[in-house]
Structures are given as C-alpha cells and as structure tokens.
Length: 303
Ligand code: PY5
Image 1 (tube, rainbow, N blue to C red):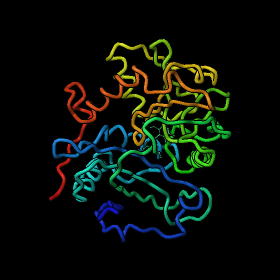
Image 2 (spheres, rainbow, N blue to C red):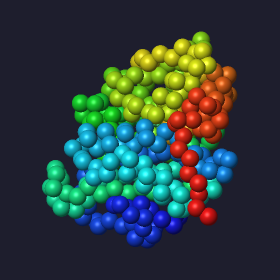
Image 3 (cartoon, rainbow, N blue to C red):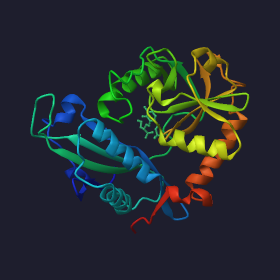
Image 4 (cartoon, protein in one colour):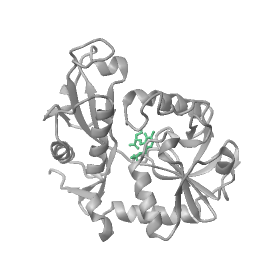
C-alpha cells in the first residue's frame, strides 16, 4: 500500500485517509474519478495526459452538479506531489476522486461537502492477459438519457461491475457492452476499436461510450501512421468478422481482442495494425516522440 494519500488539500498518511460511513457517495454513488498512468522511464515518472484527465474530472463533476473546490492547476500540482512523495520507481496509476461527503443524507445531497482525494499506486498490467477473450454482456451500457455516461461517475460503474463479473464467471477476460440500440459500445472499462481492410473503426460518442483519452490518443497516432479512422456505429456481426479488434484505456492501454462470443477475431493473434499502433503508443508514453512530449508531465521521485 502507498505511504501517502493526498486528501482535501494535504498529504496524509495512508491510515488517515478515511471517511465516515455516513458519506453521501457511499449511499448513492455520487463520486467522480479518473485513472491516469505514470510510466517510469529514464529515472523519472512520466505522467500521461494529466491535464486532459483532470479536465474530464472537472467536467464529470459539473454534470453531477458538483463543484470541485480546487482549480485544475491545484489538482495538477497535487497529483504531481502525491506521485513524488510516495517515491515510486515503477509504473504508477493515479486515481483522483471527488465525492459528496457529509452534510445531507437525502438523495440530492446538495448541502453535503465535496471531498477530494488523490491516490497513487503501483500498477502493472490491468487486464490479466496480453490478448483477451470476450463475451458480449447481457447488460447494456445505459443510454445517455438514463444516466450521463459521458461522466466518469462512480454510480455508472455498477453496470461495469455486473458485466465484468458476468464475463469472469463465464470464463472470459472481459465483457463488451452493446449500447441501447444494440450496437457495439465498449468494454467494462475500455473503449473498443475494430480494423477492417486496414481502416480503424470505433463507436461514436452517441453510442453511450465514455470518451476515452486513450481512444483520442489512438485516433491521433493511427492518423499519423497514415490510417483512416472512422467514428461510426459498429454492429455485432461486424465485430465478429473484423480483421483485428482491440481495447484502449488508461488501465488496459492497448489490448488486442482475439475472440468474441466463440468467434476467433482475424487470425487469433495480434494483428499488424494493432501491433504498429501499440509500438508507437509505447514510444509516445515513454516521452521519446518529440511531437507528443507536451502530453507528458515528468515527476522526479523523492529519494
Ligand atoms: N470506458 C470506460 C467505461 C472506462 O472506465 C474507461 C477507463 C475507458 C472507457 C477508457 O478511458 P481512458 O482512455 O480515458 O482511460 N477506465 C478506467 C481506466 O483508468 C478505470 C476502469 C476501472 O482505464
């Protein structure tokens, strides 16, 4: 476990980063969070697209009528501080979370406090396998007139929790949601891409996806490599018959999908397009591609 946690404005010992059972978020899921990776390369931790994640955090909060009592600059400084203070010399995962605390027990919680914590923990691979076998979940991702799925809000993750457990209990690595119209949406914690005739296709924002930062990174890098990328609806049959498929996400990074619902995808191994994009992604997150060094925040770990 990490030594320190950033909690409501200061660095506290792990044991002291506690909340009461009465907090609003525990009862109603009223929290917003982020997942951010820091890669340990060249003796520093290189945090990837930190400000973009913090912008999304603030926007998620806005959708939930929550005012985070810190500016983006303060959150950026705090994320750097907690990464440095823990002295990590390995890859890390930074998890800022803002939630409704004490003050009002009713469902609205408008009078409750807004608490903010930032954790930094070591993290290697997230999905258990390098190449994953998936099932289409029996749970649909909620449409955005049921829940604001653009927000990375804790309550929305009940559907991911159910889908993920269902996949695991059925012997699969990950679940794929359909959207409410029956089109391919995303994984329980990842966006999805398919490749057809060397063209990349990914579901659009109106397919109830979380608009992933890794998704945006992959779209950018794929275009740099000369590929066409299309954002459009994907049918289930297209997913079964595509040449390549992969997940993108901060935790999952770029993870090839080799099987869906007992159909082998492509040749059942990592495809050429996936492989090229993954290689460039590695280079970019390690800070070795000049064009994208602005995506990286370097943190020197404390001795
Ligand atoms: N879709 C969902 C539902 C997600 O939870 C995530 C990220 C993504 C897409 C990809 O977004 P991004 O590329 O911006 O990370 N999931 C989190 C992550 O840190 C945590 C999941 C437990 O990867």
